[in-house]
Image (cartoon, rainbow, N blue to C red; front, side, top):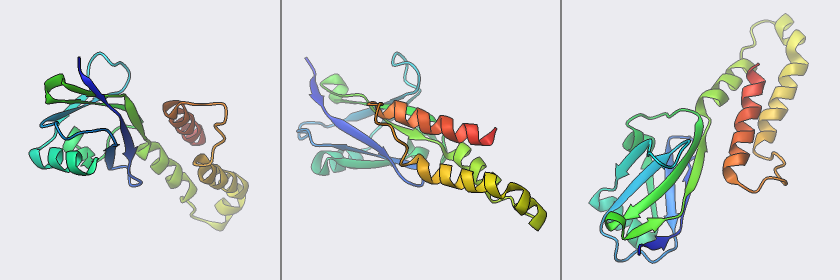
Length: 167
């Protein structure tokens, strides 16, 4: 039976990398595969095999940072919730499922709307709307999710709020 390790995945603020941390005993791990899922856990959307240096760093420090360029082959990935799952030594070690959310595209479009001021008349006509959108953007990270216990549901609620701002 495989040994379970506990991981936590955290997306960077610039939305270009993910840091995976673990406080589990990792000393016997010699190879690690990262599987990324979006909607179903049956087929991985992306698979990444850690290099020897990344395995060494992860085993010794319990932390490794991987860029989206390394994992997906592109610097920016689609807005979505990504589920992470590690296997070590060809299945001798398996991790819990954890995840991270990315909303690069929709957040950029919202900021473009907020910053597209050209004339004083336009500013006057849209001042209230811009002010409310600014407050909404600032409040997304502080969004009251007291009734929600899952990180992926919280993220999807924030992404939905950003998408509604574009309508």
